[in-house]
Amino acid sequence: MSFFKSLILAIIATLIITYALGTSLIELFDIDVYMGDELIEPLKAISISALVVVVLMLVAVAIVLSVFGSIIFIGVLIFGAIIFAMVGAFWPIFLIAGVIWLCTGNKKTVHQG
Image (tube, rainbow, N blue to C red; front, side):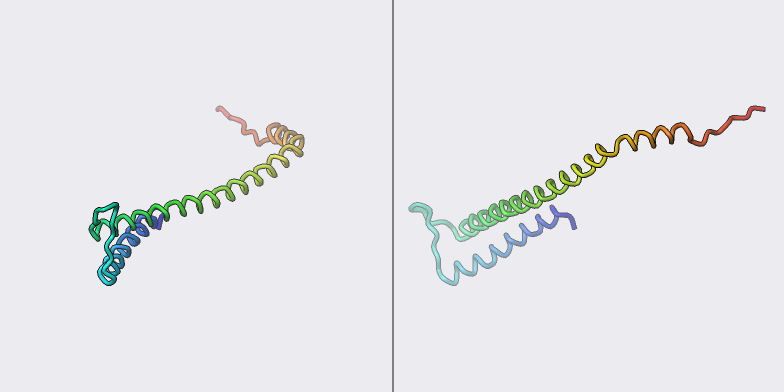
């Protein structure tokens, strides 16, 4: 399963669980949510909290991906530095081997007749 498909499914599951549990808790504890002096409907109160949770989850995913992305980037930089150091140290040997390979390659003769 791809990362983005899993992310979408996690967001949908979060919204459904938040709605189901949020409605139950609001009705169980008889909670009223006010914004200023205005009473907010239970569905709007749950949707606002669910959106806040989804935004926080996306921020957490971005932080995790940036940390792992930078670790992978540093690993690629170290591997590249080692490869370039080896090529820089042994380039005369590679050059001579390339010249020998070009000069002594199997040459096919074309027979016309």
